[in-house]
Image (cartoon, rainbow, N blue to C red):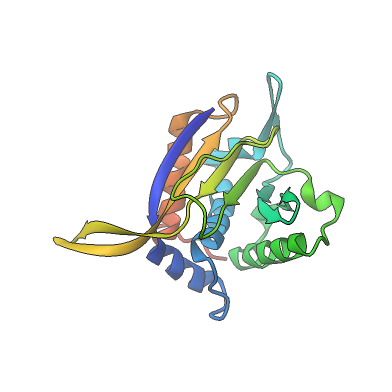
Length: 201
């Protein structure tokens, strides 16, 4: 396995979230915005390898970008999947994410809605750790862990300020990608969050 981590300012996630979502739906912006951005990064040909799965010594290309969302339920975890995200606008991806999470909590998912993911996103919520490394669910190629939002003292324009941040940790299967590509994936994701590469449709 290979790992890469980056810190993101939650203020950027707030701004991105408001641009993609209706104003009344700004809940857990870091988690939701990261999920939406991952879908966007996966549409780049530079990161197409993350739409593959690893089976023994073989890399099996998927027929699209299919993303799992790790959801904690009463008796464990469910991972609903949003299929073919490359065909969706960011707003539609965000709506489908919210619907998947809601139906997971209500036990209303269909079997085909928990199959076929090539990469997943995990968030342990406000009570979770600052940073954690999630375990890949085989045969998926990678999993992104989103740490809890916390206040951090940083230097900004010559002044010391407090800003909310969240840590991202990407774990990849070394048969599919290496740490360098994982780091590039995160850099691209952060660029989108910070507004340097918004590709809203």
